[in-house]
Length: 462
Image 1 (cartoon, rainbow, N blue to C red):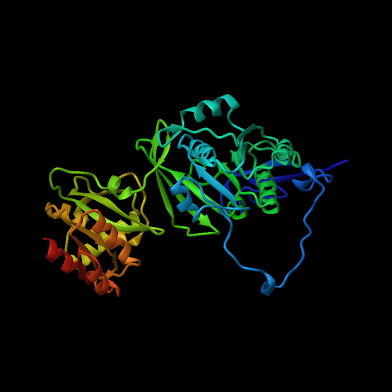
Image 2 (tube, rainbow, N blue to C red):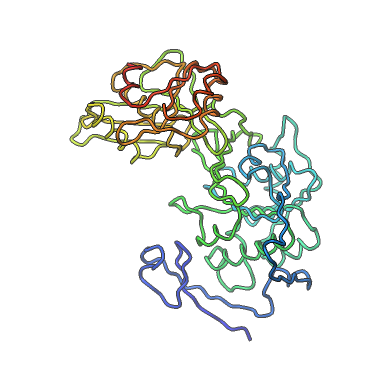
């Protein structure tokens, strides 16, 4: 008879305890422990036991004997997905994709799976019926033509035992699971979507991916706080974590890399949500800069970088006299503490009285930027709104601001200058301390202006 074991799991971080605790020692959340019954069946220890008796025997090898080489990658027709994954889907990798409900996760990966014409793709759905998936697939188009793929297979099932039996028969090249929270393993007698079930099901797919060298996509839900639902260990188990985000009121969606063992962790893919599926945006700078007939104050263009992709984005600010006792500081797409730091620099080094002003800041296009090189554009947008003097439309900025008012150098300045020149800008203001600026002036037709302090920028512009 199987041995029954009961444990308490923190629903926030997945911490396991043998007894109920009021506060989680791991994440400090109160009243987050829930009892789950775990029934271990000693007869089934691995996904392999569902399918075959062939087990890989591991043994220790010297590092010098291991042959290094490039990972085998499956290149998709989606250039944005290839960029985010670091050049394509790595064989044997397990990829977790998270996002809000209705943001387009299922649509994106159904479309990506259908476009893999040369691979046998198995799409496992625990949320929708075959008819629902077929209806959505019929609406998807690629370059104006509907997508037909005879190598694309559907399986609507939640039991991992049944799933792996089907996988043994089909032998797919790529597996897409939608979603990991709906799966249920018979190794554990716990409810569907619980911490222990998510951990066990993800573990089974991880073992399957590594032992058969088959890439697996796990689509996951997020919590109301914005984190990935399930235990934190889920993010440690997988090779790649992708976040699919965007504002429902905008047509654009962003696929962002949070973790990648095979590439950069700061890559960005931009899609446009249409009635015919997700369309990759090849030149996002054009959509992130609004077209205006007249010059307006409080607007500056920043040359930023996401991974290896240069972007020109529009920073909008509004500085008004404060009506209430405490001035407001409202931001969208930018770090509020970073804004307060820049305001303190302007107050101390420039003598501007922002302490009695309401300040509103917005990054156009609904995207969130973390690159510190946007500081100079934010500062110039604030000064433009403060003085109510519009900045020239042909100028853009790239520089980080230090606490003493100096303009600090930023990395990969040549790519930023090249992107600004490509979009027709005539001037770019950068830090004087960038070492490669002298060579950049000779390579590009755009005028590169170097400055060392905030005061110099103010005198030049105003």
